[in-house]
Length: 217
Image 1 (cartoon, rainbow, N blue to C red):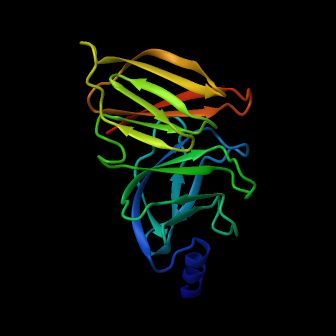
Image 2 (cartoon, one colour; image 1 turned 60 degrees about the vertical axis):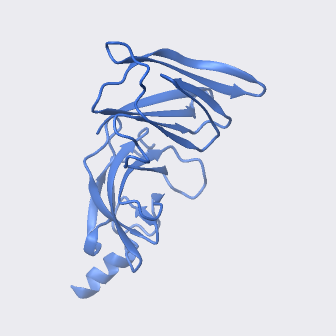
Image 3 (cartoon, rainbow, N blue to C red; image 1 turned 120 degrees about the horizontal axis):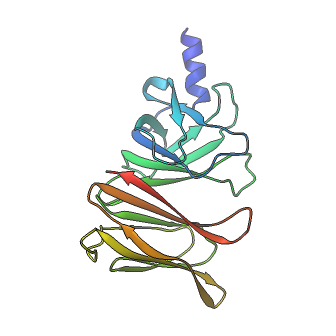
């Protein structure tokens, strides 16, 4: 029994320099193999199920980060991880966003970690993540930001709203020296709800797109 526990600890990557992280998962799109959940190491080294919902974030799952890294596998016996999350030091609660893979490491998802705190994801506010290959300009209420590739921007809830809590939003993608408007609309920003906006290149059409998620506080 002791040998089995030690083997599980080794496979799931649990050792010293551990930090507990409450993770909420959100899958950008389903992987080609249809994977709907991973396992990762929880406290004590036990395998913990990690669901991968594609519309709303999961409930919090308590995992252990070894030296700032959480490895996700489809099964305990898998030698190599299917996804790897890098968790910044001191982050105890996070949104773990599973994205389509861009590298050749044999992983089925790239991972972005967004700190679930007033600093990383403000109450009633927004986060914009730019996965496009060039800069993105966006307007959310009174907020106007130019975001470089691979960067995120946390924003407070817009104050420039009408009586229905509706505010103007616009996203523009840089294309060489030109800017192209990809989305321009009114969106509701009620109290008690946060928004995640992701700009990316559609793998099918190779054109820039915007995807948004509503997240409870």
